[in-house]
Image 1 (cartoon, rainbow over the protein chains, first blue to last red):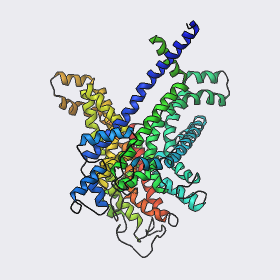
Image 2 (cartoon, each protein chain N blue to C red):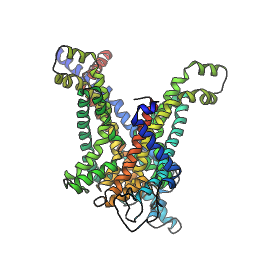
Image 3 (cartoon, each protein chain N blue to C red):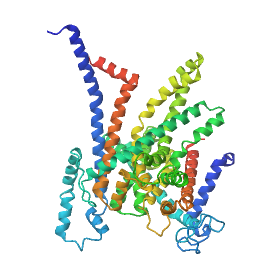
Image 4 (spheres, each protein chain N blue to C red):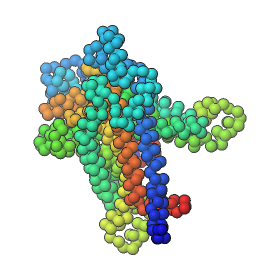
Length: 340
Length: 265
């Protein structure tokens, strides 16, 4: 026999678990949908556009359809999963993703998953540096713009961060290399060796990342700045520093977290250029080399990986958001109350 | 006049006018042949006769940049046009038809928007092969999703208006209503967006050309010029930095004009 308070406790725990499940399951399904849809779009593009990937890869290696034995071509197709009817290629490819099998690279003969797994940490290091650096810079500029007086000064400050997205990444990279590698000798100009080699590529990608963060930050900060609770806080004579940190920033930071998913997409595109400029190993270089070799299985693998990272990060951010923001939490709990 | 009160917009318009002139008649602006050596000075620094210096084959870099405008800018314009056309068709149909078609197609449009534009373009280049045309199509496909979304929103806004209702009551057929009434009223926001997308397209096209997927040498293309200069960045940094600065100036100018079309300050 269970005591009543125990029953209440377990019912509450069950209710919470149900509420969490109700919150999470649709989001996980959404995650799978994004991966599936990305795979489908990429697959359709690869097969709707003219060109035979095996022939294209062969021709780059010096062979072609006429000089290669048809039986050998068929064997190659079978090896890379490019044989059989399209729907079958489509299905086996998609099922393979969830088993961690991305197929075999046409150019190197290695499993695509191995190649991606090897490149991933290098790119992640640069991406995290860019996210943190961009976030910090956007925060600094937002506070500066918020506090800047007179109005024209604020206008000038708010004009600076958007430049970050207009500068081509290769230009930023080359300027940084000329100044900090060849000029001052502070950081290596190329290579994948330790933290020092992450700094310049990281800064290059931090500029556009920061510009995107700033857009969201500054809108949220100026919104919050005009809201009743800030007017009240100012009116009751709180120090400006307290008002900014406690009331304005706290309310402005949360929405910006939701765009991290968008940033991941942007970074995934940006690494292709940055890793080429700095001759670094990573997902971007892997993709560029794969496109140069017309290696469709690697390109496909990278696209699906990026979609998966994007989907998982979005899922985690959504989950965290529920934990951090008391308002979302209340909504969760009140939904539970209604369901009882 | 509006232009004279805002010097930054005036500068932007002048930059774009020069860029347009370079596209139409590069030989009038470029002092030298972009493909021929013009002397014996290799990797020469910027000077009065060679504004951007000379490259490793002693070609005049300024002339190459001027001639490069044609390939780079027309690829960007083509990309935006392709994205605009594809996106508009999707947006018009989903917005006007509504229902299940709308729901399903727009989910795919969301995914199209979520896939980074460069990756999408790389898929297209991997399947179609290299060249400015595949780059343009790839970048255009990346922009199509956003265009579809904006166009759909405009169609939904206009669809409920009285003149559209009136036309439909009078028995005007669907496609005619779309072409005559819905499209013209949705044009302004779409045009503002096209201008914004043009700036992004110039960046993407030059990035892809920098990566070596564009026109093959010796044809001049902006991204490829920066990439070619990269090998000499320690000794002759101007070779890549000056063409890069030209790209930046054009992108900023397009942005500035786009903002004024949208009606911002």
